[in-house]
Image 1 (spheres, rainbow, N blue to C red):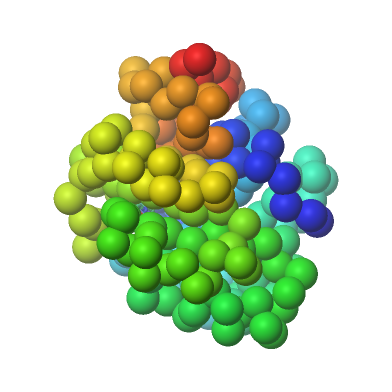
Image 2 (image 1 turned 180 degrees about the vertical axis):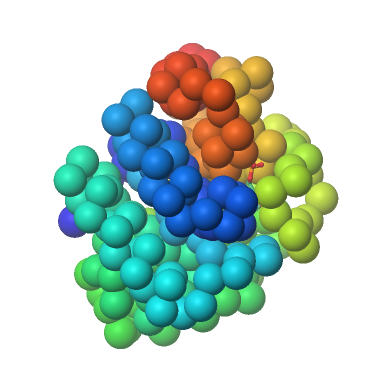
Length: 215
Ligand code: 3NM
């Protein structure tokens, strides 16, 4: 699958640590979110996941089947081997994960996302940008969904990064139905969320609201 910035519009990030360690619940949420129109899914087993490697592979394969059925790209957080094993379309790496250029050498077909928290990290990542399809920038607001999370950068911090790059940017961290209109479509390519969807009591409605961003 070839990268297209439209894919980033509403990007669901999820792992079993976000679903009470219950793989079936994860699959149910992803199915509902796909039916409601999320445009990308990231499989992120981290922050206290209890799954073994074999369980991640089994769940990752099931997840990939349901994203494929909707022709929605599946990204895997950080784990190159897992991404290859389950046939994911993309990978997302952070500043301390395996380097984007190393992964790109091994698998030029994988779409690539890179996390950048501020201008300094953007500058440090310049040499990697030719192999990067999009940047994940955050946390914008406070979030309870990530352990070792940095201080929120706010809308100003997000704007600072956006003005210094031509890469599509996905904002992440504390984005919910009540603040999504802050992210103007002509500036921010997409929004990535965990709890807005995993804790929603009406996923269909939530995704619709997340899609209607500010102009
Ligand atoms: N990465 P929620 S913040 C996975 O800043 C993740 O890089 C972040 O969860 C970053 O939508 C975050 O529930 C958690 O706030 C996002």
